[in-house]
Image (tube, rainbow, N blue to C red; front, side, top):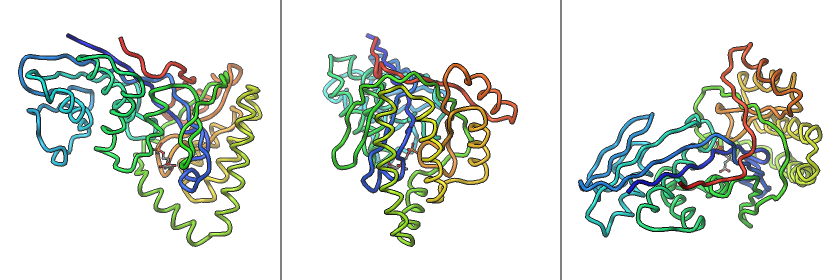
Length: 313
Ligand code: PMV
């Protein structure tokens, strides 16, 4: 028996960092996917093959002793074959660059949970999401679950630390050109730096949180109206807030300027310090925006919102 599942990556459109302090963030799934193929095998072993390496172990190894980034797959396979006599072979194919804030690990966990569990029965998307978040916790103990949620259900989502997730039903028609700084970032480290900024600038930070909240409310209206130019202005404004809290650097600023030259607005997405930026476009300025990055030798690609989320086949 073989089963296959794929899940999209994600970007944070608005609200990163401020979300840690109670402001709403807006995320969307992107049409770049991770596909996982799982096969039940007679040999009692778990074997994982991907373009970042290989992991082959017997069942019941202690998770804490596994250092491979493929650990979430092992966790899932091991959990699911507990009461079986067989093993599992897993193959991972990815269109999402790793470690740059585009949700590659969440997409792995969601597609992995779906493909592996489908070998032995049918689970709802909610059940798969629960398994995926458990698996993601083997690498990011403090994950909010926001990334796995958007990778499972697709589309646009607002996320509030206290109130959780809610799907945004708008279907705006923009393109995002994502440019990769190729600098891996540690979300944990950048979040700690922002905390320091906040502690030394309480009043300014609190004002920024209010401004970001107002911006996000505005964005929700603009998304409904498919007002891409209006959204671009909010992108630019949000980037200014991110500059103020210190998560940018010369390389990212340079990339944002290149993006801004031909798009409606450009900003860092995710933790910053490295990772990716995006530029918001429609059909009319998509090609020029891509050219702008390519002329300066930056790796970039365009995406649209993925409305499908997890897909099993
Ligand atoms: O780098 P990413 O895409 O994992 O984003 C981190 C988002 C932060 O708001 C900076 C942190 C968080 O936990 O929400």
